[in-house]
Amino acid sequence: MRIGVYLAHPCPGSFNHAVFTAVVEELRDRGCHVLAHDLYAEGFAPVLTADETETVQSATSARDVQVELHRSEVATLDAMVLVHPNWWGMPPATSVRSPTRPTNCAHPGCARHVSKPLS
Image (cartoon, rainbow, N blue to C red):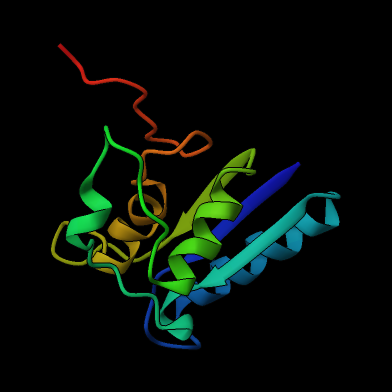
């Protein structure tokens, strides 16, 4: 089983980092192929560009190398685990946008693929 584990917390040594590490280790011990990403350490930019909001027309390739990497990985995952704090009733923007930015594309294989306009 291919599982993506995504951490969205800026402070190394935090409780969220400990949870992330424990989840990754446990899944690997159970024989899963784990793709682990610390989004803050990677410098992931959570902001959607105007080009990335197209959901009906063919999406152009992302100009962001990280988004392309995440898009190609997400299309092959069996499951996703998101580890993040809850600040003021919401997860941080990096956590909210991390699953939606790579999957907000219109080509087949993406989670939000739309083959024709909705009527």
